[in-house]
Length: 189
Length: 262
Image (cartoon, rainbow over all chains, first blue to last red; front, side, top):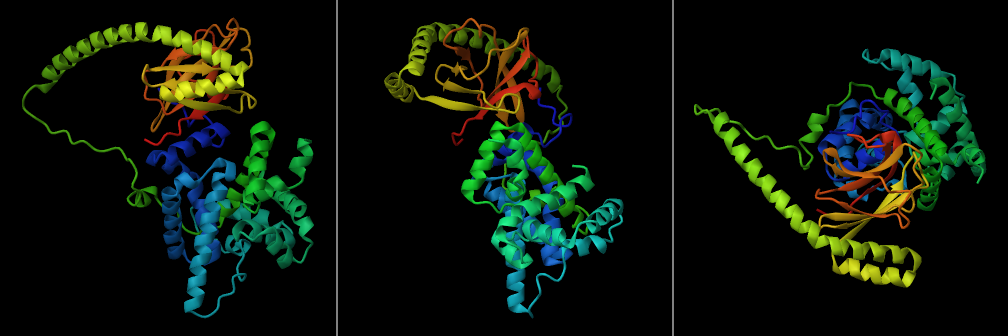
């Protein structure tokens, strides 16, 4: 007798909370489920920062080992589980680029946005997915592309994003809301 | 609070991005607990970001098995089974039957002694818990009693089916019984009963502790229930009269895990 995960959407509150509880009890099976839910997105975030497939794979693994070792420090009160992973991933990737730029010549962090990655996506496996998304993303305004890049892919604070985009700090919340709204309409979520 | 306005403010998008302060995060979490529509909104926002970041990945997915080798978790141990020429199955069959028989007899005996032993204690505790909800001083005294008796208290939080519900379980491991304070649950609708579950988390296994058939009649809403399980969490679901074999997740009213370190 056990709960039927497959017959229910995984992201209902209850299921996800239980999976996370199990993960915090060091249940490898539960962690595998969480890994399968989030590892692609997390490595997408990392790739967007480091721009190297091998390095991305290494850092992704580091992130998930770190999350496992620090499982007890996560609490749903502090935010979404995905957001927690996102933070670990962005920090790890940025740390890597910093250490690299120290050793080599300076690297412009802003040279490639996630939109450019979608445009040059060569993978055949999920090409339909990527092409569809490419169309969708190309319909976003330039401001929205930058907004999403800074807030989600790079982990800028509201203040940093406002400065970078040269808009008033007070408008970040609502402008971002409308950008994500456009994206959601196009994605149908 | 105007929930539509709250959602429209854009705070949830920043919540998912992770740019809110710790205090703001806790506030959003409190609102999510109260309003399922806010949770739905958060999930949709998260899904949009998941789509986008997923597509920014260039190569094929990384397998979990490579990672797993580096995790020091409690993966199921593999016990090798060696073949032998003796017809072990026959011996094992008999051995199992004898073992099962003696365990059964032992359990019945144990159960009877325990029942008589704890009957008085149960009554007394139920009275005490009842008093406690009326009187803070009494409650403090009760806490002392609970401490002495090594009783674990587990709060059960309301879930999506009934976010405002709550309950509390007092677990006396010594006597294998729990005292469920279910005052924070609404009256069950006609033809439905609450069913209490003991949960093991790894792997997730629910064990029914039975239904609460006297919920409406009971005035103090404190129920003493046998629990011989090594529980890791407790849950309460709303089920058709007579109870169900496995819990109906959509009707999960309250859930709480035991925090004690193993």
